[in-house]
Image 1: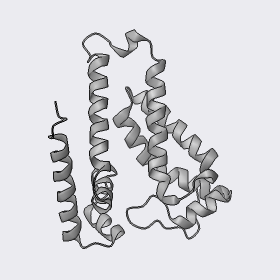
Image 2 (image 1 turned 180 degrees about the vertical axis):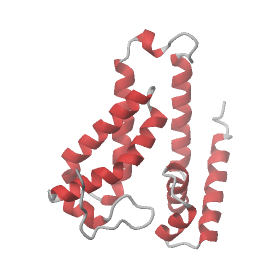
Image 3 (image 1 turned 90 degrees about the vertical axis):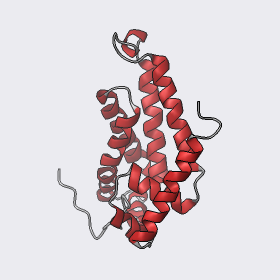
Length: 186
């Protein structure tokens, strides 16, 4: 199936335009398909970092995209799309992890479930450190390091010069490092 998108070009660094989200919220099937299609690589990349297995990542991404397809009309703002999708993926990965039998979670020679939980707790600490950043630094860090956009695209999307974007990214990375090396680091 080929998806045709009429005059909906996302700005650099964005998945979709506000206009495309609005059309999807109103039930336009082409727009809904375009939103789901453009979210897919980001959702799958995120699922691969959270889920226990590649199969679980595929399943979690698929469930998240199905949820997006069904509930895009309830999305209040296009800016919330990414966080909404990532929350769905995270919850789905956790659901899939809970369904596994104990012997599937701790195969011989693999890390223990406890080690896996500790890694996930560390991921929560990183998320909290990123969440504590000033808005611009957080947006630059997420677009560049999480979503993988090129520096020029991030700068253009945020209306910054390339040098200013790099400066904000450096500050954000340093702040996250400092937060992780703080008193809670053990």
